[in-house]
Image (cartoon, rainbow, N blue to C red; front, side, top):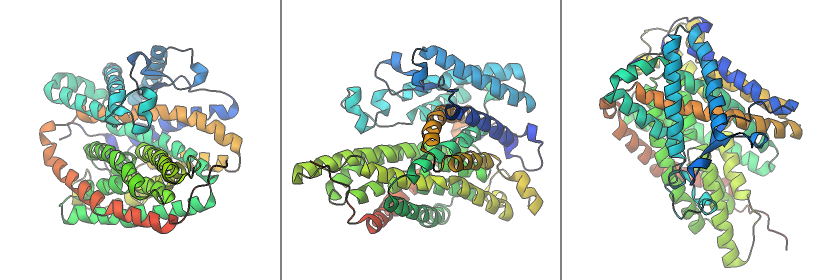
Length: 496
């Protein structure tokens, strides 16, 4: 299915300067360090391009920071391209790539990927229901991450219908490298969310911790069992599938796939399915919560955090639910709840689930190495035994980068509100690179994938597993847990 293997997926000792995992750590940490600039009074990444949800294409992209508001969108885009080109070329050179083909290939891949992101962020495609009025539109598909899917589709078209072009671009198509670098940066973003959660109401935080137990110790093993037992998926597919459905969607599926060294196509196919289901949940669940849970608003908020399997989707659903329930209660009873408490509950619940992505990836990586599940499940390993000494060699180093950026930011910011505020600005800017790197991964996967074998990989069964698990028990167990911990707790009432 995949036309090339990456050295990150090959077992055995690989020198640090030849290893994609280590280069993901170096690049991710470098971007992370630049993102700390605002703490020291320097906005070092404010020029990074951001693709906006748009109705006017001339406003579809521009610099992230208001500090660079006078910079044109094209200048911001060019600087972002040049920055990533230089960093990746250094890494590619160290790993033995053909530099001329890499530079040309990366340039083409970057241009196509950004165009896909722009198309995917058209308001009628991407706008969530709570943003439609602001954008002046009456409807939207609500597919907020559709740009990733468009990038993968375009990559598939080029890879399967223009093989000569694809062959030339493959030198720069490094899906594992792109995604793992993005995950290292993601650690800092999760750290920022955690710092924000520390200051929330203690009651909400304690209950948010219970979500961790539910997601990792109830959802995950049940989904994994169903995928293996009844749908006959190998461990290579079942583990990322369980993480994607039960933890936090795209990020969890990708982190798990990297941790167990699955083929790159595995988490990307799963991500495509997850994004579609998140859109369906965003359309259905806030309405359901408003209709049946308006007397238990905090239960409704927690449910959004437990049920919607992406960060953006969970937060958007929490915001929609917050708005709909407050309006309904005010109309029916005259009681006006303070804005944001249901959203806070949804966000906090999701944050505590996200915090443990790196820990879970670490645990799964150790288990997969010790029991050699790649060999048993059709992954990339070909060894029959794995010694204790080889666990480190085969362990996904990007998990270390994720944990490092998370812990540094968390420990540094604890108890210092000024650091939290400044760090959030810089890490949000660094996170702009994560979005682009994720999109580059999706395009690269499409480029090196044989589309005729996609269905053989189990797309139909993936949809079936997701539907069975989500609508069969995840939604209802999540609602039950939310009811247990938030029943009877109400948001503060606005003072007259």
